[in-house]
Image (cartoon, rainbow, N blue to C red; front, side):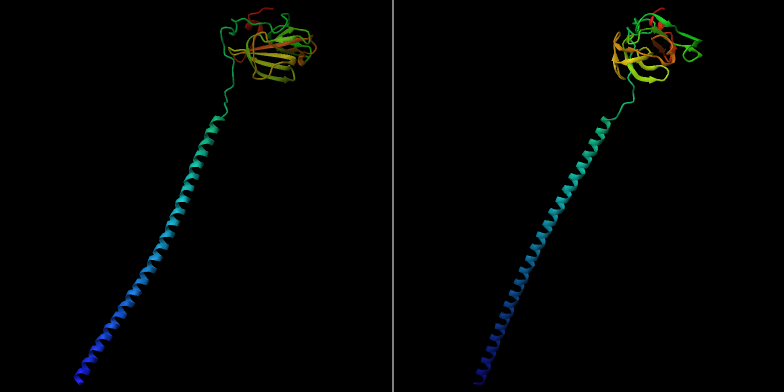
Length: 238
């Protein structure tokens, strides 16, 4: 009996040990299963965050690149605009041709053909100023208000008022010939206008430093920077 009881006790112990091992094994299985699930959730959440961060970075990079491209395009446009608006410093001139070569071409009288005072580089008495001075011009006798015309085609260089000469129209007639129509009253042209031979420029007025003389047009011609006799350069005579 004793031997049989002892054998039964050993069997119970063995069974109990097996049950304990099964319980422990089951617990380990459950434990590792739970840990594995939690780890997967964490990894998935982390992956989502990284994906969102990458998308945001790409969006920012795209915006920066677009902004840089726009800035470059704008800068290029501004440079092109500045180049287009770059002003020119070249002054327009009247070219010489077959019809406006000094001493050779045909020129019209600016008004009446009658000469009141001729061209001279000698000193002569000026009744108005009360002194002696050269008269490097031709005074054409014209009634006040008479029309004055262009002696040839030309470009109006300036229209100005001078204290001694009155209103002066300066015209480039080509071939380095510049004519000054002095003592004008009404003026029909402006700086930059192109005129044709015989075109009306205005009307005769007064020449302040020759005011004591009868009405006339004080007419000067400058060739290559030097005063010359207007009658000679136009092929006319007194």
